[in-house]
Length: 275
Ligand SMILES: NC(=O)c1ccc[n+]([C@@H]2O[C@H](COP(=O)([O-])OP(=O)(O)OC[C@H]3O[C@@H](n4cnc5c(N)ncnc54)[C@H](OP(=O)(O)O)[C@@H]3O)[C@@H](O)[C@H]2O)c1
Image 1: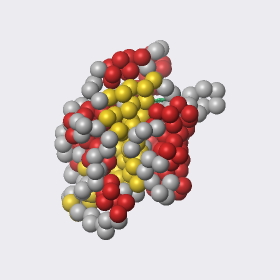
Image 2: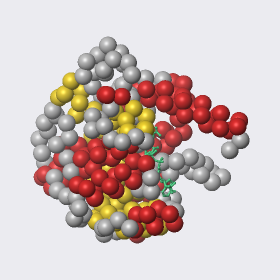
Image 3: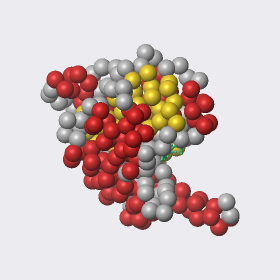
Image 4: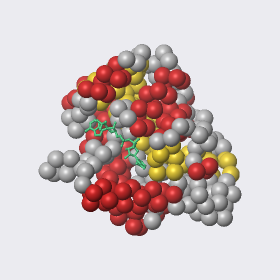
């Protein structure tokens, strides 16, 4: 990478990090437990799953999700769709993990890989690809959502980002400007799930700025769409796996941040307890 490109990338990273580090000052944080009436569909979701499909499991949050599923549901199988030889090799060494090599842009490939699974998690994200500038944030996630719908897989957890949909105002306009293509693509994927998959028990988790450090165990989710902050990837994974089997997370859009990482005073976060 040339120095100029590096500087641009570094500046972008700083801008994104500062955007996600932005918090609301002078507030205390509170816990509220959200009690919802549990439908039979919700009750059915309070279960472990036999075969959990993970898209994005080669690295980052997705890779931590595979470890968290292994730790919490050792009997469950994991089917991971990954692109690289290295990822196939690494994941294939893990018990109960079936690493399938393929591209999320390939809808038939995605459908074939999800076939036989009973829950789906996607952390897909990336830069624009090809001449048309297609984004896996929309196209790949849309393929996963559609395939789940076609195959009757009713549990879907989609990881997007703070700044999507009705959380746009949580991040400063300058940062939104930098991230807008990815956020718009992720928002489109969210909307497919929300508007068209009415029989699906979906949960959307929108993390704040991600850091690759060990889990703190203090990260939370909230329905407050104005919250923004940072969170470690491993903590996002823990929350995603907890949400997977939490009936009260069904059809919820939850922002994920770590109050302990907030730089200004502790934010007031109306914490959503996953249960
Ligand atoms: N960076 C942040 O601060 C931030 C903040 C909020 C939300 N997010 C979002 O949170 C999610 C997790 O982020 P992360 O940084 O931990 O993960 P990441 O490094 O962005 O990883 C994205 C995953 O998607 C996979 N992927 C991309 N294109 C694919 C394709 N065409 N087919 C199959 N797999 C494909 C990648 O596989 P390969 O290894 O093959 O590339 C990788 O496993 C992402 O959606 C990200 O956009 C990021």
